[in-house]
Each structure stands twice: as C-alpha cells, then as structure tokens.
Image (cartoon, rainbow, N blue to C red):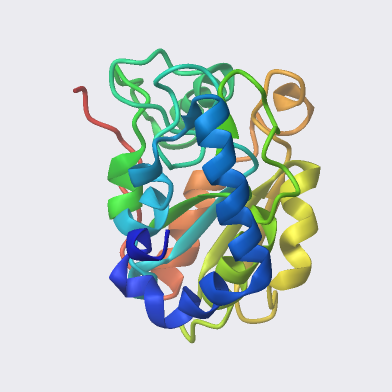
Length: 225
C-alpha cells in the first residue's frame, strides 16, 4: 500500500509503512480481499489523506469504522458516495447543521467539499469486511491512524479536533489541548444524538475558532449533485 499513500503525507508517515505492525496489516488485508469484499476499494483507503494534504489540515473529525454496506464507504468518515442514501448518523449531522448554521439538506451524503477545505475526515480503522462492522478492528489500523493524529498534533498552527463519542474521545490523550482546540461531544448516532449531540453547535464553534486563528471558516453547505 506504500504507493497509495498520498505524497503530502509521505514525509510524516512513510516510516509507519515499514514497521512490523503495518506489514502484518498488509498481509491481513491481502487475505481478507481474497476471502470477501472489503470496503472501501483499495484505491480509496487513503482518500481522507489524499483530499486533505497534511499542510492544509485545519480540522480533524474522527470516526471509528467505515460503513459496511455496498457502495457506501469511500474513505471519508461519516461520508457516503453521491447517489447513496445518507445513513442515520449523517442524517443527524445534517439536522444539527441546520439548527447550527442554517444548513440546507443536500440530495447526497458526500462530504468531499469539507475535505477539500481542510477537514480531515479520518476513521480510526480504514477498512472493513462487507456487512461485518468492526471486522478489521485491532488489526493495526489504529496504530497507523494514531500516528496520523500525532502528526497533525505536531503542526505548529492551531488545529481543531472534533471527537464525537467515547471511542473518539479516548484519542484526546494524543493531542496537546493547550495548543489545539479539542471539542468533545456526544456521537450523532441515533442511540446517542438526543443525549447531547443535538444543540451542541460544533460547526459554528469550529468556524469561530478558525477565524480567531486567522484561518478561513468552513463553508459547511454541501451542494446538490
């Protein structure tokens, strides 16, 4: 997978690809792809890093595991391909965006425009076996994505880390909260959205922090496709 790692991230991460854990992860994925469909397709595993170069990361939103149904996952957390019905968590994100920043629900679930504006949409685990959530947990991806979080933490300019839910919030220990802004909140899934996600206004908080840091705010509105 070394050749798939985007050029802007290679100085920061190429060393990870030579470590024993990553070699083991590659062997595991090779066998998994022989046994069953794996999402997202191999060429899209690093899409989050490709669409948001290292020097352009201003916000990091951490997800857990790719969507596991057909044609959903394309390498960005919470995002689905255009033409695919937005899953419940994304529907709830859209609802909060509407009340927070006047967002108008688009006809798709693609968050690519956010990624292109400097929002790194990173899952902790970057692959999954079809129809089996968390099936690639504890195979090495978490070590790799922890390295991504650490490298973003090393950036001299201020970054906003958005950690929804208990799983993501455990990663706060990798972040210097004195230099960066860490926003913790309830997860947007239907199980927890009404317990603190709705009404949390994370998107306007992010934009206020970006402007205060001398950076352009994110245009959260997504276009119809």
